[in-house]
Image (cartoon, rainbow, N blue to C red; front, side):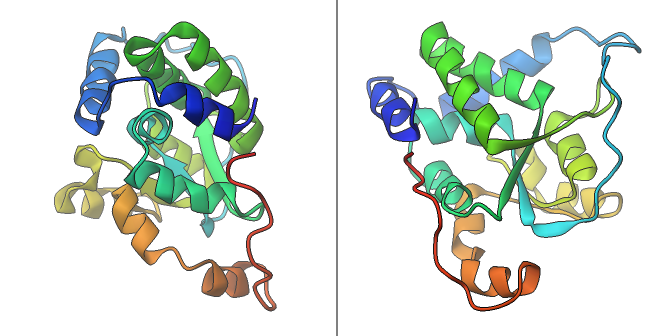
Amino acid sequence: MSWGDLFERAAAVDADVAAVRAALDDRRASQPAPAADAVDDPVTEPRDPSPARVVADADVLAADLLVDGDARNALDGVRAHSWVALVASGPLLDDAEAVVAALADDGLAADWRARVEQLCDPVVHPAGDHPALASAYRGGAMHVLTVGDLGSAGANAAIRGRVETSVKSPRAFAAVFDPGSLYAAVEGGEYPGPDRDPRA
C-alpha cells in the first residue's frame, strides 16, 4: 500500500495534533515498566551522527498520517530522498501504531505499520529508554521531530549534553531542511533533486 493510499484513507479520520499528542501521552503513561530483559535483540551500537538521519517521535508519525499539515510537510522531505534516513525503534513504531489505532482503526494502523517499516532504518535500544531519544542516540540521528515537550529549550539543552541531536517541531524542521546543501555535505557533488515519490 502506498503513502498516498494511506493518506486518502486517513482523511476521513477526525483528529488534530492535540488529539494525537493526548493519545500518545495516554499510551506512554499506561505502559508498565519493562522487564530488564524485555529486548531480545542485541542493542544497536551508537552510530556516527549525521544530519541526514532523522527521528520523528510517535506524535509526528501519527500526525503525518492522520492530520497532514506540518508533520506531513516535514516527513515528505525524508520520503522524497533515499539518502535521508528515518530512524525508528520498535517501541517508537509501537507507540505511533497504538495512537493511530486509538484515533482511527486497527486496520489503518496495521497497514501504516507495514508501510513505515519499509521506509525506516531500524534500531534497537534498551527497554525503558525514551523511544525517540534512544532511537536518535543509537541511530546517529541529528534531528528529532516532536510536537511534545522534548522541543522546549531546557529539554533541548539537556539532550544535546548527551546526544548530538537537536529537537525541533515539524514546522521548524521543514523550514530549515535544505536538501541541496545537505546533499553536498553528506553525499558530495551536485544535488540531483528528489529521487523518490513521497506518495509512493
